[in-house]
Image (tube, rainbow, N blue to C red):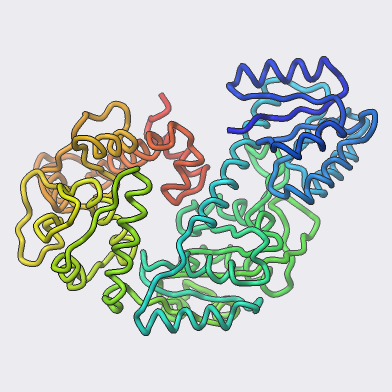
Length: 498
């Protein structure tokens, strides 16, 4: 993590913040005036900038405006005396993350700075994901049609609806549409509307004002605000609650929205790309999706074909994922035999491209030789093969198998610290194992079997994500595809914070 920069002409304020932030494990660099800060930006950039408003040789508002031009995603916290409260509010409108009123409580100040750091890290990860996202691969005619559609839509601002099965790569298509559009210089912000609880989704989308509800201690920008000037990708739009569909329709209709608890309309300059695996016409007929919103979203529809409809793409995708997995693990890329590719091309891949990617990660760790033969493929992929005792399936991508060398490193990065050094699943089909456990519990008369197993599953998956991110909850939530409030609530409900 990069250091926190503090700008204040008052040496005592700098001293207090330096000590408090260092105690919280953060590196700090202090400045006494805006001029020195701007000079420092020539060689470095902070994780978060904290600036006073009134200083000799400049002020925090002007500094904020200059920084926003060159570093629009950098969180800036403005410090202000009570008499400058109006200026602080104006700074929020100018793009500041939040403000601190002097005199401030040191613990609350550190909490605020930590929230700014968390958001900064999340933005960096989103940028890295966008930069590292591979171009869509595909030689099949169906994919060529998708590529042509992306080309035709490159200079358009029209709303796009992407349909396709889970794991087929809908977000990659959305990123490609953004990257080839006039908005490519702006942010790409994605949100899975099905992964966020109904009572939190409105705040996630539109933000909230301080005091809008219990726990809203600071103003928070929503995804619409974060995507300003760029693209907002609404994944799994078919699962959005009806009342929020009404709010989204209003934004699409007149381009304005309100933060939760806010009274001032905010103008949105965001392109909407939506995606769903649901059959929206059917959901409209069932009264579960607004027909007027459907027509607003369904201006241009792109259907992304499942992997089983483009088997000719399996070979290049497999080679690509094997190469990328090897780079991630720091090992020599494995090659795959023609016979093994033929087997994969016959497999239906119900999990689509995502399942193929997980399989390639598994093979990179588990295949014993540099050339992957048919016998090295997992049992649930090989035709007519029976599950083997002690062999794990890549379908259980949340449970990585420890093995010598690279495999042990990979497992250690995924499993919680309390997990055993090796983990051998008793059957290749982990879903069948869950079924066996469920039957055993029901025979024993265990009450609420579904609740019991769901809690165990959620606890294991969250523990794996937290282990991989070294306890950083926001990063863990992103890996799981859920909101940060959701993972916090789940950790509390499952008793994992004790």
